[in-house]
Length: 259
Image (cartoon, rainbow, N blue to C red; front, side):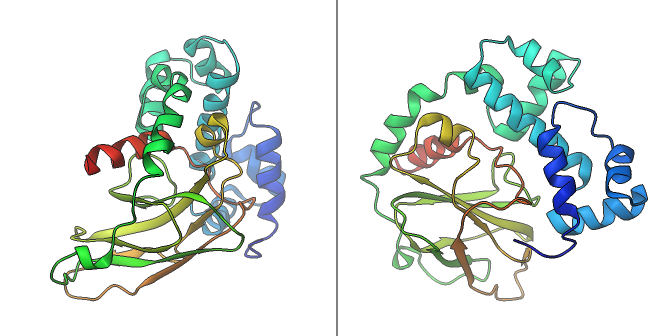
């Protein structure tokens, strides 16, 4: 558990337990017994996200669960998470998950096909990258517990795996990864894993997946060499942001590039 501002733990638990209720900044700040300004500052320092961004992300994760496990209409699901407009809900969902709510609802039928194809994939070797380039983000991935499945790694522009990553890859075993020719900018390296035995709903609403993230943002600048990133997959923590991007979509995009 992260012990920086550990008092935020109780607020995060409160948010999870009351995700269907009012969770305004003033309400959460009162619960934490801080001023809204001070609460926002320490919440973001702890989680990487503003309280509003964190809550809205959890609500979209809730929408994913409702799409898979209920027969509610998409409009009703938008209403359930506080979106009065069907258009607004659909737009925000699509931006952060990568596909529309209706497409997401159909996703389970494709997962086994993607996993079967990935089982035949061999990890990309560093030797396949030609001359060294300064804009390379590379590293290695380990795991705290035994793991067999696929590992999805991505460089995101925000400290949450939402929306398509700027750069992404999939590994079928622990080991090295590399992103060549990365454009200058600031990126957040985030990694998650899917075991071969996982059920489709566990992949589509990934709450219990092993995961990891780089401890600091990665600054890509053509004038400096980027330190090697050493990542260790671990069990999810209370303060982890939800994984909003559709993992099957990332699998599909990866396989399409390879083919």
